Length: 269
Length: 324
Image 1 (cartoon, each protein chain N blue to C red):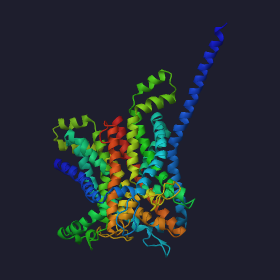
Image 2 (spheres, chains in turn yellow, cyan):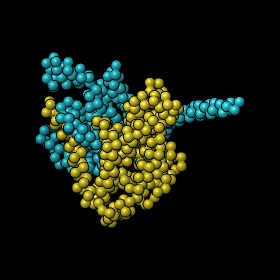
Image 3 (cartoon, rainbow over the protein chains, first blue to last red):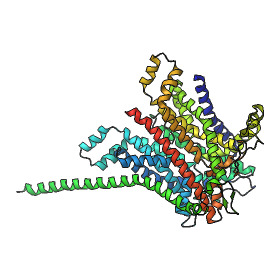
Image 4 (cartoon, each protein chain N blue to C red):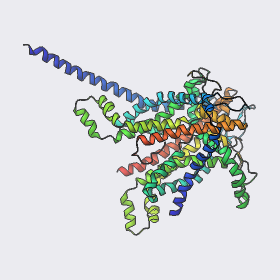
């Protein structure tokens, strides 16, 4: 049985190795400078790139962070300071529930609220859907990191005559900053590759657009469109796109890892 | 005489500062409370929006949405039973594959692995959760499906003679329930193993030492002392993985074949609720069609809500016991 646990460890890490190896092999051959600077080509035309999708993904991450980070950190502060109150327990439970909601449900919610009334797909709707997904992630990591800050620090600041709000922001929050940055990065890494919430919000765009009120291209959407089509050239583009996407996600994950090295095996959710 | 006004001034200033800080505290509390309340508000808003949008379909079609299996948009038939069936079956297959592996990894990492190996392996397994689902789907289409079709499916059906059972009979399609199950297993594994590892490591030392002192081997200690203590937490982890698998959209849509039929064979294509929504939502032609898709979303919402709530409660109950 002990042997089985060794085998399980090998089998569990195998898919990761296989997927990454395959991605690098398939993706690297189709990657070129043009991939980052050119627009998607038309069907059957070789070459072309995903410049618009890369910019689109960065914009969506930006919109999502503007929404998700402040609300998440604020809620985390509240939970850490009011722990034990019924409201805090309820909020904590619901944030876990929210975290477990399928991303496609978030997508149809954003569609119903932001797309249907104006009858127009938009980058904003996509960013809001992703931002809403970030909130519970950031909330829980912020709370966890704040709870680790020693009470003596807080008491020292209060004893020096700091008001409560300054104690929280410039002493407690600052002490936990590295951990909170980690949480934020993990949340960004998680939403950067999300596709389902964007299907009927950001929609995707074959053209250059940086307007928040217009449909916008995104790497995951572009990979999906190319993968399910029959053209070999598009398949190559899909692999290249996937390699770029996973590189972005892995860099963010590694950055999160090194922002706080103390926590052993932080769960990604 | 001359000192008095200064004193007043000092007093006033002190009073002012107290007032200002009290103001600051009030604003600060109101802001953080507003952020915290945004979470319940969001959950309620999601529920209301989806159920309101799903209501016309439920009002017109009743529960035939979940009980009938004929999905024909032009004829106005919206029976999502095959999609519900496919969601449940693909997730079950995923759990059957992922659970033993995930718990094996968790035990390996918490009990047997050399210290220097724990962090890297744990990180690698966690990274599985960081891979975007569309990348899993891409890999599924071009690597996993050919592998299953050419080697695994014929092996299961013919070499192991499992073709005699309805579960592995019929022609080996590439896109299939089995392909979806395997992809979902890989995706759910990191969630199950990271929760299991945490609850295993939360088992008190005394529990282990007592078992060893009674003459148990290391494996007996794990089986009889550690796992029973962590059981509800591990089950919670499995349910969290289940929640992920039930709602997973892109990877499944890309490998399951998207055929709205109920088939006992895992080698045949199927459909899931999430992929039904993903495929048809942006092309929904009528209001009823749209509403029916929202109804499917509502069913998915309820199922994942229940699974996640139970999972959190189970994990939480272990944490509470630890602190007592």
